[in-house]
Length: 158
Image 1 (cartoon, rainbow, N blue to C red):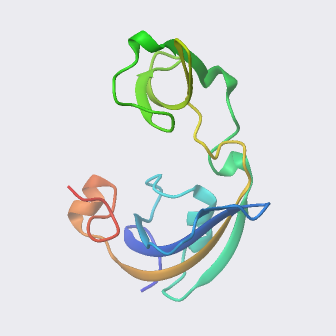
Image 2: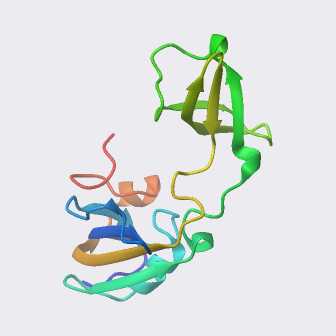
């Protein structure tokens, strides 16, 4: 079966930057629902359209086509006294962003009475290289299409 609208696709995907730093070794398969569901970067999905199991490719995405450019307006602080217990550097906290919408912030540093937070994805601003191998392609179930993501071993679990 070829990759097309409403197919469940399982991939191995190694992710590195231009310097060769590895962000995902690609050993653990991932699955996504193909067809403009925002489950995969648009340029990766376009490159996979029509392909079948066994297909391999390497694509480099500019920061804008991956996690976007850094937005310094998403770097903020909060008083340690207002900080929930148990969260450490590297953890996440949900709070309103500059636009008032809830978003996740990464805890980047705890310095005295202040907690530094960054609402940017850790890979923002980076061009990334994706080495992809298509492992499996199958028709998505009606439930997967309704939920707009793949269920099962390498997809979302309810």
